[in-house]
Image (tube, rainbow, N blue to C red; front, side, top):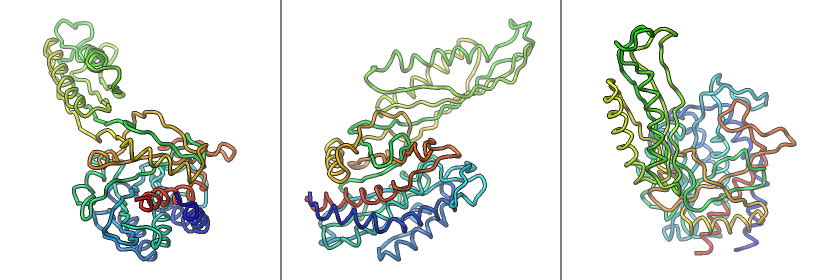
Length: 399
């Protein structure tokens, strides 16, 4: 690993910090929901043009694919990814860059991801005489909303012409202190499917249950029985969870309703088991309901697949990050049953998805993502931009 190039990247990430910070502030002030990122796309394209990069807009409608070319640009290809969409949350922070759009906020750090990748692009372009190959930049829409912008970018050809050997993605993590990053080899994040059930019976007076078909009782049996799908059909070595978070029965103390509405989530880290579980859930729901005289309208809405980090690539990234930041600043991540549409890329090519620490307890920056008070210690911007550039340039140098 080249210490001189590492120091140049450190210097450039420091000298470009105010620019990267300005990008983040602009994006944070003007958030856009999933698949509505038209202004964001135009802004990012404008900055890519200023840097001097080739790019294509309108990929999957509001996405961008750009290219940073080094020496011998056709020799090898790597990809970096950032997401651009915001959330329907009203910001509670009182900062100069507070969201100007009521009810919309970059509460998951996608403004950070986009700014850091722009910064990495700028650094890579300025050092283009020091590395070989091409770095493809994928600025994608709609990470927060099914079917996931990553799936649409892939369908639109973002991983083709040219096809990268692997892809790297970076995501903020408010549980990790600023200055540190986290990695995990192999299984990392879960698939996420949504379950919707309407259990239909025959309502009536609560004092005369014998002439009714009680959908509340049927629903109770279903929720309990469905837990065996995971606990008695799957090896405990495979992560999986089935949870129901919404049950609506519009009856009363003495009224049995006609139907009960239920919503839940099923998550796992095994795609083969995922398909089997869908079949078992369907069979159990209809069979048990029928045995109790009820019927069920069941929908299993398939979401993102599980996310796997290719072990060899991730080990390579860990070593490079340790060299760039110091071994003490690279931590191990645990399995996480949340979902991320970067998983679509990991199902198509070798991938590594890692975490950027943003927490600073001394400054009171501790809020979780998807909350109205989420923010970051902005020192993470220079770390995020520099590390992305280093991970790409280190690999392209080594090859």
